[in-house]
Structure formats: structure tokens, C-alpha cells
Image (cartoon, rainbow, N blue to C red; front, side, top):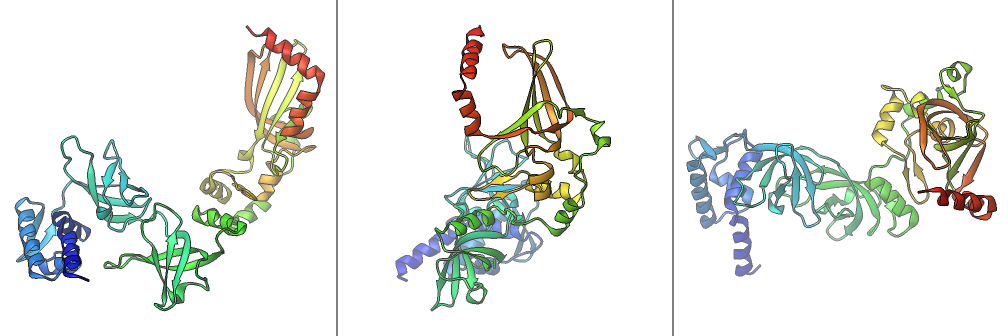
Length: 408
């Protein structure tokens, strides 16, 4: 390295010295430091830099931002300027903290991130706002990591006996260092799932280990597995959840039917994509004696099976919804429910929750009812089939024109 580059590097380290010293002291607020210890943390050992540290310590003490607890040893003064929030990283390496203490997000420059990662719950120090400027701050402590696993591409350096994983996420601003004995048989260029283990104080990157080799980039199975791993989508249900679902009574009983509105004799059908495996909603239609139409909108009554406080309820809460990928579904409920008891398959009776409307020929709602029902699906249509029935049946076309002309 040339003298010019050395000088530039040294200047970069001390250019924001006040904030850097405060960051060191705030990170370990229960510990005191002298100027030599601070210099060591900054990685500087020349007399000029040490003198600047001594001057900055004196200035911070005079401003009552730090206190001298022993001769030449300083620690941060605890005050009300510390807050907590969630870090939202940008792809540029800066971040914003969402905190209940502020109406707007607090900007965190990249040099004040202090090893926090996207989504982490953090403690931060809020600087005094500049005139008309945005609120800025500095992260002083990581309260809780949002995640410890990342998907990325591994780069193996055989001669140097180590590897780095470059994360797929644009919000992950650092590569992950992996010792060669922790690559888990991964080959250079593989997509992998890596687990963070630690982030040493003086290290630029966190240490990790390869948990799983996902495959070669570009391959269909690799990309699907990468999506699932990146977003933490579970491949399977825990054993206790599957066992609980398998032990449920999913039969349609007379006792339960008496507690519901029985709509099994009403014409009922589902309309879904051709390749749908679960049918969670249906329509029913009936012409009433008074000339009104009764339209029923039915969804599977999941709450009949998923009771509060059960392992099934806890698992459904964690998953929140079923997720549809290109070639598979990550269901919210085990298959016995998602494709069985809670799927409104044709020619089967099911417990449902329904919204039932009475309408006239102008589609004006005259009455409505909501509640638990039992239904029987007479038929299953794909979207294309339902559309073809409407388009190819002259009666539908005549009625549609008549309906349109009847509107004001």
C-alpha cells in the first residue's frame, strides 16, 4: 500500500471520530475505555490519531455526552436518547428504523449500522435533528436477530482454504465467511442455505456454515428450493401437528347438522383453475317462490376443526396462509384438512360458513344472512368450462342482454 493510500485509509477511520467513539462507548455501556483501548478498536496506532482521540474524549466529556469514571477511562452517559425499533435496510447499504417513538422513520447511515441486519430489533441513539433535516441515528445494540439463515451462492477459495457466500437478498450488505471445513460438500457456484454463527468484533463479515446445498443456479428445483429457504417456507408439518390432524373426527354428523343451516339440496358448485387441488369456496343458486334469487357464497368452515389453543391452531397462525408456487403448494393446514375436510370437492357434504343473499332480477339485495351451514357440491367447473357455458349457450346471451337493458 502506498503512503497516499495509507493516509487516505487513516483519514477515513477518523473522519467521523466523534460518532465512532460514541458508538464504541454506547455499545458496551457498562464498560469503561481509555484512549488506547479505543484506538485499538479503531485499528489505529499512530501518535496523530491517538491525539485526536484524546481531544475528542475531552470534548465529549465537556458536552456531558460521556463521563470519566476513573482517571483516563470513559463510559457513555445513559440518557433518554436511546430508543428501540426494527431496522429496514435498503439495497444501498443504508437503513431506516421503524420506531414507535418517532412519527417518521429514522435514517441510519451505512457507517452507523454496526453489524445489524435487515429486520433486526435494535437499540439506537437518535442524534439531534438538524434544521429541517431528517432524523438520523446510530445503532448501539442488537436486541434480537430477525433471521440467522440466508440463501446465496458460495464462492470457494481453495488456495486460501475458505469460502464466502454471497446472499441473494439485496438487503444483505455483507458476504458471509465460511471456513472450508463447514461448506458441507458444497461446490463452487452452488446455491446454498447458510447459517450465521457469530460476527467477531474486528471482522468485516459474519462467520457461518452451510446448512444445506440447494443445487446449481438456474435449475428449476434449485430455484424453487431457494425461494422456500429464503422465505422460511416449511417443507413439512411437525409430527405432532400431523398426528393431531389425523386424530380429528372429520365425519358429517347429524348432531352437528342440527346446529347449522342445511343447504345440501341447493344447487351448489365450485369454479377453480384446472389444476386446483383444494376447493375452498363454492356458489349456490336457487329460485324462490316469490321470484327472488337466493345466492349463497360458501367457504370451508376451517374453524370447526382448528380450535384455539391447539397445536394445529398455532401452526396455522405461524403459516398465516397457503402459498402457491409454480409447481407446488405450501399449505396452511395438513393435507387431511386442506385437500380433504376443508376442500369443497364435488359430491361430498362439507361444513361451511356462508353468506346468503336474496336478490331481484336487477341484482338488488333484498335480504341477507350469514352463518354456519352444511352444503353439498353438485359439480366442479374450471374457469374455462364456466366461461364456455356462458358464451356458447344462447339462453345465457339473451338473458345477459335483457339484464343489461334493464339497468337504469
